[in-house]
Image 1 (cartoon, rainbow, N blue to C red):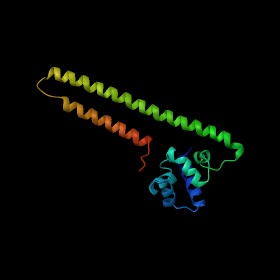
Image 2 (cartoon, one colour):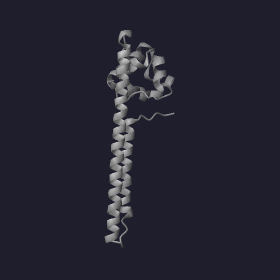
Image 3 (cartoon, one colour):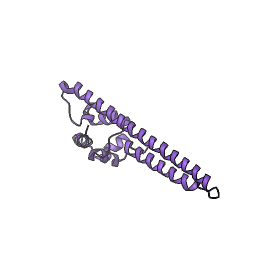
Image 4 (tube, rainbow, N blue to C red):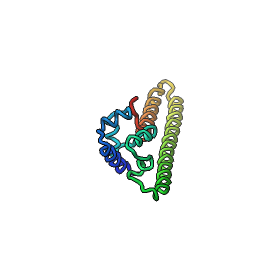
Length: 156
């Protein structure tokens, strides 16, 4: 399931139907920039839009995920390949999330221990803000980075 191939397929199907990116976007209640991102392979259509998109373009979801028209003899095989690839992507995203979570736990634990040690040896200095804010910033940056890598935000 190559995004660029899928994007070119969406573009070709849209043009076959005589639709502009703006017209397709209006039918799906999204921006034309989202359609442009799909067609250039920068992102994929949201799962909640796939059935409507396929209906408008006159294709099946399996064809959309394959990035090409599928001959009926190959349909079952391609469906299984697409499902396996989607499962692999889901597992990869979950693994990345778990890694980030482990990094955050180690980071917060390290800052907590360091804070306790610093407060023990230097009780007159308040290290809470010095160590707490960077750990919160690191956590926020990692989570935001992971979120934007794995999800597409669509306007309502």
